[in-house]
Length: 400
Ligand code: CA
Image (cartoon, rainbow, N blue to C red; front, side, top):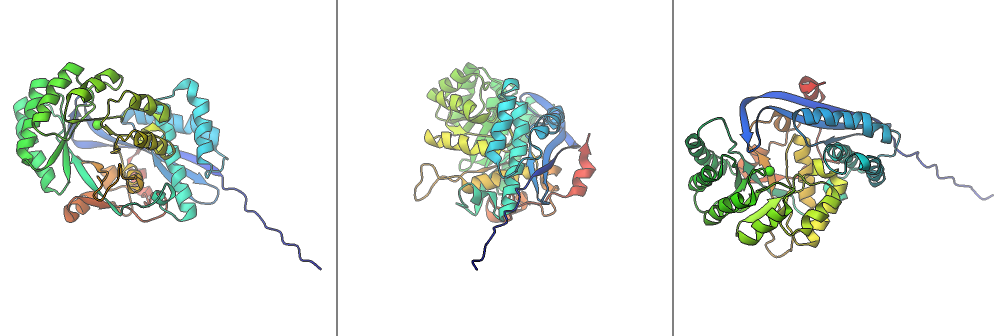
């Protein structure tokens, strides 16, 4: 008698609950950039629980009250759309949510909220398969990445005090082991040029520095600063003009030797398509926790590569954002490739951030790694993001 074999198919995993955690603490000192001063650190973490006991973590870009508003979008708008879905159906979920939110925001907070959820779904996929995300998205092309340290924030002090402090801070970041450094500007054209000169003096001639304007200039003012940066051999000039000023980007890129960087305020493949169309970027800085998550980042990175625009991720936030970026940088293909390819750098904020340094049961210890390896940090090996957030730490800093 012929035996009958029945293959019992396991039912698909289901998303059971989506919880958004907004964490805050008062920083030891107020810091600033060209748009505002701030004294509170915020992180917005997304926890996606499944019926199989696997939990994924993600993060949404956005400080302060933006994080609180995004929490409502995650929990009250996106969660009802997708609870009960198979978390492995990441692309289907992304397009379902985007399609339903399209009429209410193709950019901005709705997409920031979706980003955190999408990253958590990739973490679930990694944990379910036992693979780190870098292997799921293409492979572990490198075991470590070089790290640049940014600091030199604005404070409520005179231009002369800024000049003296920036010179010292730049040297300290170099001495801490980072492969390059990045400064803020925003005091005004004349003083900003003095600040950049002070940084060059602090680091010496053989060290790379970048300048972040956080879109505080008109194109003409940016050109004046940019010409000074050319003389100082700055590596890139970040967000010199408003992200909407695409003509300004193109104007500057045609006239300056210093590379023009930007894109942290752009969203989705469609926003990036239009941004790249203007040919105003020398370096693309996609923000995975804002532009639509890992699923969308991969599409944006492909668009950048199609135009031979190098990608150096924008990184901001907690250890979850840092780990997400480490996974993506590990898998980023060399562009254009060669015997000694240019390696993508990890952006690292050297100012006080407990949510990056203390959130995990096993911290990433970036500063320590940088100090002992000559500026490099290892890619975590564990499944998914390769990290384990500490629930007691989250409970301690969570605000409602
Ligand atoms: Ca920036």
